[in-house]
Image (cartoon, rainbow, N blue to C red; front, top):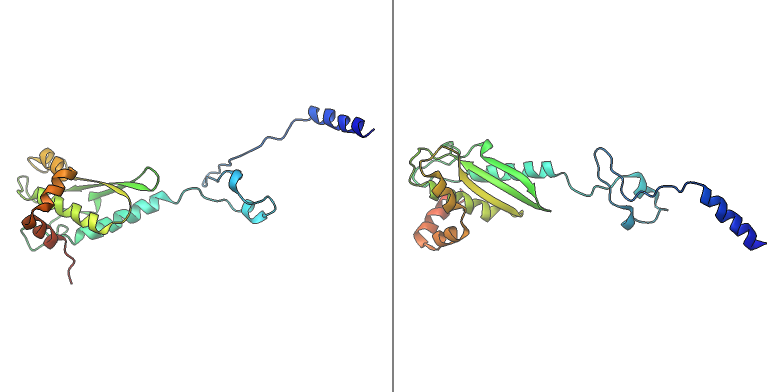
Length: 188
């Protein structure tokens, strides 16, 4: 008798459509984490509040951009008593930040030498790189370039200031390192 009623229940349930199982739910603003690793269904608060799987990337990019821009405003020009911001070598539009692979960021800095034949453009790029590497802790891939059309040898200088080996070799020179350090030193 027990077996007969059990078989009736199985056959009657086969006719009913099975509810669909949803592992991930996507709303307009939030991406929810899969239900596999969430606490028990008995914990109602977990199910009533959505959990974000990623932080707000745009605000983080904006924060990194502002931090880098503020740092670069204080870098001094190698031959003049002014800062790069005073000379319009670096502006608010010079820094671009984009999210990249997990928790990394791509940072591109376009700087504008004071004259198209500036002999210290590579040194300015080296100072910019030094200031950022010394002060920014986030994982970043840094590209420093001369703004397009603003220098007569921009392509060559861009290669120099973005080549790790050339940068390392330049900073091994004690005179050059001292000059870079004096340009990026914090004012007291």
